[in-house]
Image (cartoon, rainbow over all chains, first blue to last red; front, side):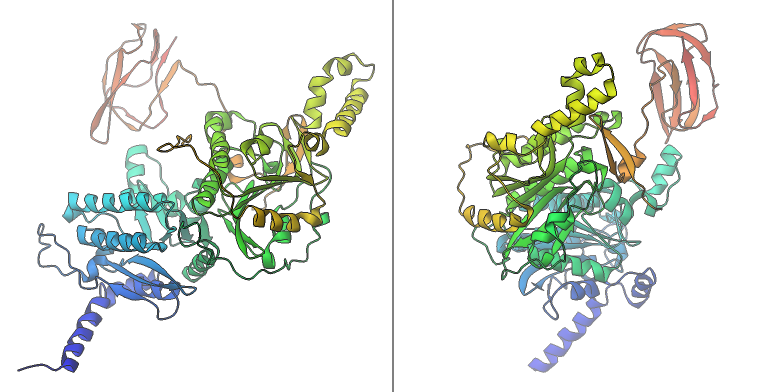
Length: 518
Length: 103
């Protein structure tokens, strides 16, 4: 008997429906009970409505050991496909925890590497949703091969397409290294769990008892380890964050790609840029107000908001063009550079450079954080990353010195000497080898100690030093600062500098690659 | 918990600013007491190679701790005379528990 097209279609629909049930009703119920959405629900929420096209739906695992041959694992525990976000194409995979805990077997990995290859070939962003118990032990070394092939592709795609990892469940052991190799890691409170060795192993080996949440929960990675770049309270919020990020960043590293630019708009925040920064350099303020005072619609998407908050990094637009902002944050630790903030800034700079995003740096820092823990944690090595990243970057680099710029901190923060394209300073800028107190204590040590009233003399000398050196004019006199500007002139200057640097050409020496201090 | 301002001193200037989590968690540095040798992992003492008053050199075997089904041989990291042995064979020791002191 010959079937007609309709009947064939009906069979396909039935087959699809079966596979799309993943691990079955019970497993889906369990997934929901643990506060999580299913893989396909997640994709639907993330992508533009009805834009998802799924591939490899009928892929089956190839394991023949341990009685696996007879087992059917729908989709082999992962969903892959393409769709659009804000109308632009993206590639996506989502591990399906309802199918044997989203465990990674070889065909599961093959599906992921297929979508990685498509993303790379088509030069579109890749978003990976991780929710997996780890390696599928029955598949042995094949499972390890799968991981390795994913990591390799993550590395090869680095700096060519944006790679986003979303941790929506467990992601433990070797599996953590795919997210770690990607550009942006998104975590959700109470749902994300990431660690190399779990609480059980830590308890047996070290006798230390710790919960999964305390060891590698969302807050831990957003605040302490710096492994996560975005923190959300719900999956829905997380997907909105991803959509917003992808509206700001270019979708590949093609220099001529300008489709992330939008119509220019004025800042909207009710902020008087003249009155954000207190004159007294020891008083804190929120540097994000300065950013909001210059960006289109005062819109700013902050990356790694909770980690090393003494430096602020993120994206905003100036006159329609996406810009990467890096700003010392006096609100925290006086805005110092330390191990964590250096690492955070350096990575962000390299991301901007790879994807042709101009960098605007706002400077207000007293230098590096003093302390044994900082020295022993390698602040020399980590601090060097900032120098390296700024020096190496060939994208437009525009620096605005808001207030303090002392010593090594001044040099590191995209100074003229590291080849910044333009360096502007506000009248409140203090560009000096060190802060007035410290400098006066050294330079006038003799006068102070020999004075009848040393405290009076110290005050006098600090004032004297402030008067002469704690200003932007010494640096301006040497051409290290291109222009001293009023705060209200900042946006105008940035708009112009960005226009001017649009076709900036810089010749790089021929080398395989440099050797940054990591 | 409310994050409260601290006075951060850098090059004699006092900055009023909020501490970060990492700053609050930073451990105060303490000089290591190199004469007190402590357990780096919890486990069971299966063998002790030295006696009190014995002179030992860097690299000499001290004892064996069994942990995670592995016999971990612990060696002396510097020269000295064994002052006191705090454990005996069969003892279960916790991490950081003192094992042997030198003088």
